[in-house]
Amino acid sequence: MSASLDAADDGTVTGINVTPLVDIMLVLLVVFMVTAHLTSGSELKIQLPKTAAAAATATPGLTVTVDEEGALRLMRSPVDLDGLISALRSEAAANPGVRVTVAADGRLPYQRVVDILDSIRKAGVTRVALAGEHSGA
Image (cartoon, rainbow, N blue to C red):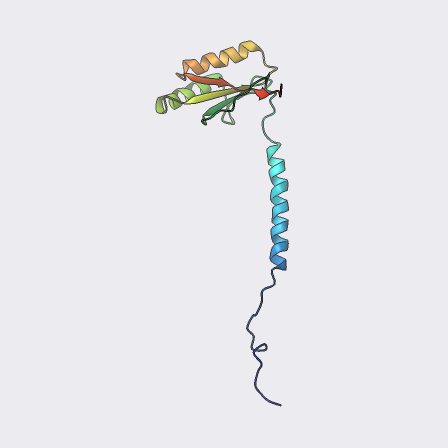
């Protein structure tokens, strides 16, 4: 018997098994897909009015969301009417061309929408848009 070692028996790794890595990546992909689906369901539930030609906005801006009960949110942060005015006033001072989009629930009384639009104008914002949902007609 000889005491010499073969090249295959010297302990060097000649290949890497990637099957466990692929299995882990597939499990992570499934976890991310499920959590992404669950987090998208936590958005505000508002029913936008239908329009025949809802235009897509070209430049990003601030969004004021009003739900069915009339609760206000500025960029997903709850605010009252006075808080909305002060936040928009400071934003308009820093960025005079700021654009505000109002996404109000379609079941909301019209007077509430007019009051919100009036408050936005009082804050010094001149570029205001109303969000709508394309009806497909």
